[in-house]
Length: 326
Image (cartoon, rainbow, N blue to C red):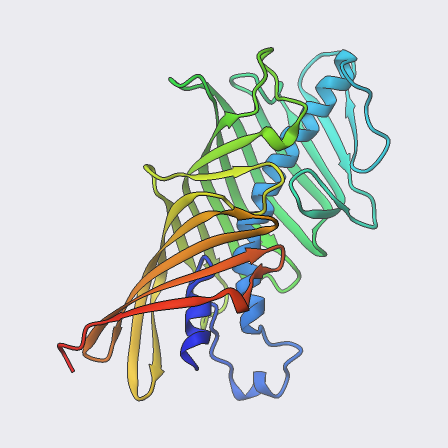
């Protein structure tokens, strides 16, 4: 395995996209998960479930505007319908993205349907909102999960706070990972003076803390737990695929060990910083410390991401090698 491939894997939110292919897998590439597949699965689950949270808020905003006559309900996809329509709660919404796929307000391409059961308005303290998915696709990958959103009211800063829980998240047909999440999302921008979400959805910005976890169903690929730094929370706006700011601490559920030039490389954690957005590209830096034979080595890996995940040609690395043990 060459060093750049190792670092590419390390720099992708999970740092362990490498799988050890068996001879059988080498003879049947169509069924083997490639390194790129693993990277995309690692990146896609948090992005997809963040998208459903944002789409839930946007859909309920459209329902409220249409119900109050503020704005007519759109007849273009996604089409939002709901019942009952007499202003009583709870309400069940159906969000239909059609069969061809449409880029939604979360910046992702969806097809299929998302149903939403809500006990109250998205902005109302105490509301419990549960999206469900029927043949629901994110960029052609079917998504299933149990997601629960609870409005916890306003914090001391006057911002709405939501608890978000995800269980049994599966993305795609191969399902190599099970995704779960317990996060808190603070709406730091996008709440109008009238107490409702602003109709300009791109102004909706959230700060995210908590944890995200992937349980691997393949022995040769490690799962992970991401803990978001409370002091440097992730910050993401509607329409963004990735955070523009934030720091996450990544811990793998098993030590990772690879042979390189006759020496063992061992690591099991990393720190990932999101560095901003330029155009449709997002910048990030991963810091990794690993044992390289008898020495300790640090690597800082800078890279960019777009809708396809990490951009390989954007990767740059900076090594600090302690040779005292050599």
